[in-house]
Image (cartoon, rainbow, N blue to C red; front, side, top):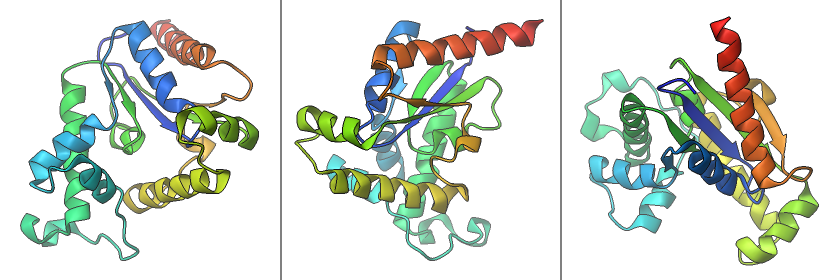
Length: 201
């Protein structure tokens, strides 16, 4: 795999995408960045050091337009926007250090101009998500799982202007209802290897 390869994984809640990202990172010997980005961004933005509070704030995306940030002093930028800005800075700074796996946080959009960035969307059928919830998400209902995804969709649309889950925004969409999480991770790695090998020809 090429140096400075960036793998971004976006996932439907309950699809096992978080585990897939960790498996990919372990197989490749890379760091996987997910909620750690929130902690680093919160410290830089000077907002609450309570992680749960910082995580909730990081998903804030009010309906009003962000506007032109260049017209405002940084301290006047709403806190939720500062969190996004700092998260983007953290992701770009991590990328400068070398290859990494990023889970969520609009990393696919933030890194889209970087060479060797590959983006994947992990989804699953309702039955799979509901069954997985029994063991991994405190037996959340499908409605509760979908509510989490709704927050992600709104957040993603607000900061990227794109539709979360739209296949056109990703290199590959993988449905984990039909393959194991291990196989999904292998598919991601194989896809990147094939793309990079083809680029050398």
